[in-house]
Length: 206
Image (cartoon, rainbow, N blue to C red; front, side, top):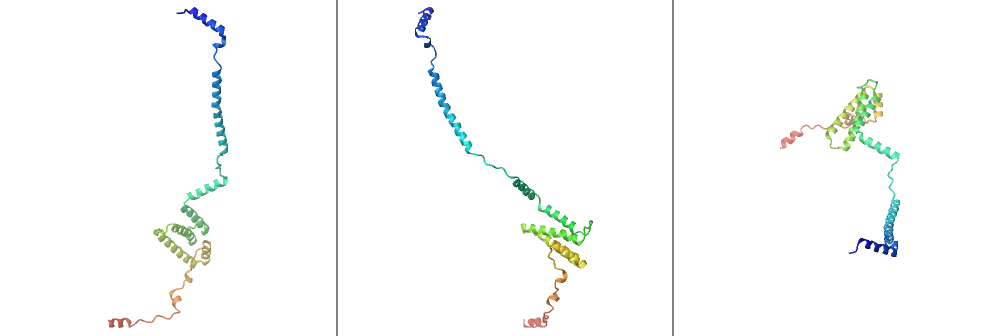
């Protein structure tokens, strides 16, 4: 076994002979590591470049709408939201105010005919969409007959007002005098021959 002093002396002499570079760490492994780092960094950089190219080629689509398109869509939505019955009630009120005789008028023929005409138009459009709504059809026929009786009364009382309300509302109505009676329509033809005795002859033959 060698003592510690002998070992230290051997190490010192070998260091003096070989020089200080013998025990220094070599630079080659560092260079090798740097080369590996460069090879790893280059594909990463190239992949980032490809991503940048792809991102520049694909531009996002433009979905911005103009102010007019937005306004139109809002108006359509509002119109669809308002029910037809509410609009009809508003028009009925406007027509009644237009054709009434005075501010407190609520029962004149013009006032009633104006409201009935708009109601008849609303029910007619309803029946076009729902042709099997027979209860509404029955109410519509009754309303048309009631309006006809009011117009006949107005024609007898004041013909000028009758003409004004019919022309303003566009009502198709025939006045009672223009409809011929049965005698006026068939009076020019000869009367039917009497049928006396024919039934007795048939009974006697049987």
